[in-house]
Length: 174
Image: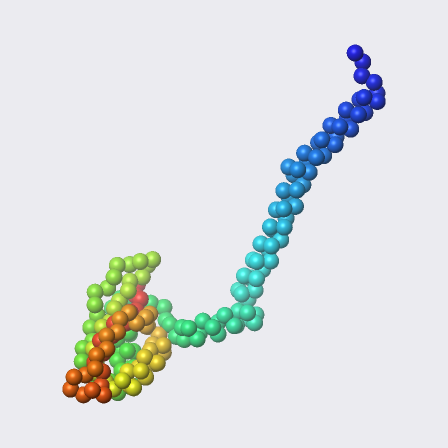
């Protein structure tokens, strides 16, 4: 059985069209879909690069926002030095507000997590509530302060215009 030249052309045309359909389905369409994904990821990454440019308006806005949240913070140092720096700065803040601490001591430090230890400074004092609020407002100026962990406030039994405060502050050290 001999195949005519017309049938040969029809078979070749059918195989060619089928090959083009398979090529489109398995290569061209996925490549175009990947291309759209790549283009969107390029846009996303270029926005990140803009933030790395410290002179761009977006980067300056992010810096300003962060400086409002954390106005001053220094890198943690070794435990003994960090203990001294934190206690000295907090004592200065108390003195500036006219508050005398009755007791100030460190609680045990935590184990290292991700390279840092957490030190907790506990202090107890009695003062008028207005001075206490002023102290709270000035705490963000302490570059060693990581956070206020606990505050217990009771009205002084002898002088009802004063409050007795026990406050636990935390700082990081190496």
